[in-house]
Length: 342
Image (cartoon, rainbow, N blue to C red; front, side, top):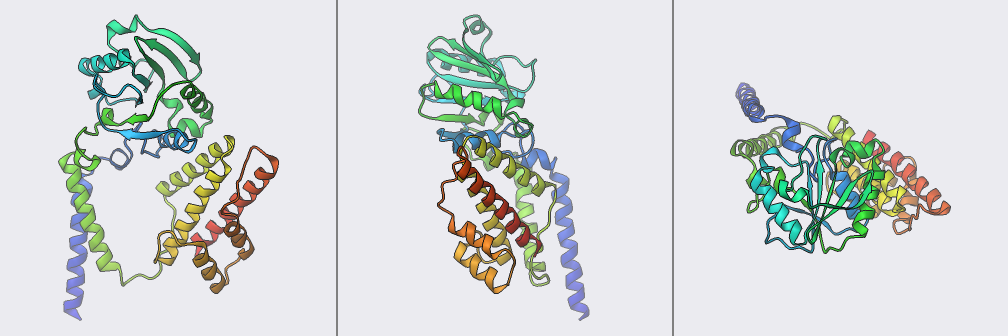
């Protein structure tokens, strides 16, 4: 018994040591997990909401990690959002300018009013205004087009505070352009051209990731048999995630994509059920129905409703579709609340 207690004490001490050094290496949680102005960040200064909305609306968007130069294809749109200061030098400006003049289309969003244009100084005098809106200005430059706007209008925070009018104006502008793909260029946020995102991270951060992985494995092995069912809990990260889901839902509804919004809640509900079952990340409805019945959980009729309306077209532009959409969303919220309280 004494040997067992000694082993447990040593194991716990080892966990704390690993955690301590991992914490020392971590610069800031926000800077590591949520790079500002990137299309994969869901925090307030990220632009994931703008990226996801365009993708849901059917625009051919993707992410790019290759710098713009004269050899890049001209039939695609490049989007640069508040680049890191390291990538605003003369060489980058000249390459971007040459690409636009040859026929490329660039959408550039500045982080502040005082930020300078990404174009070379000699090219700015040749800009010809085509269109102007609250979201920004569109110019001709040589054979290409150049749009400039304010990054704060398309951040998650900007959209949360009612900035979807700017996103809609940008989407309308894209309808009038000719292109094959729309690239959110993350190279200008420090993600290398010939490396994966993980390989582009500094060595210290990569080491931190490995340490956190070891810490997680050690914690699972050590605590796995000592704790029962996982109890869901809410922290700031989860609150932000829920806020992101709710805002994305409102945007989908405003553009008539009710089915897409219901899909968001369906996935969130299935994910919550998967966490409770601990046997499947995304259980199917027939599994959930059996479980719900066996556990005698409330709101069985509401679960049967959402399960039976998976293929319903929730057209929120019509009153009937809007009523069914509101009902489905309210049912999902109740069901999610039930499963997370277990």
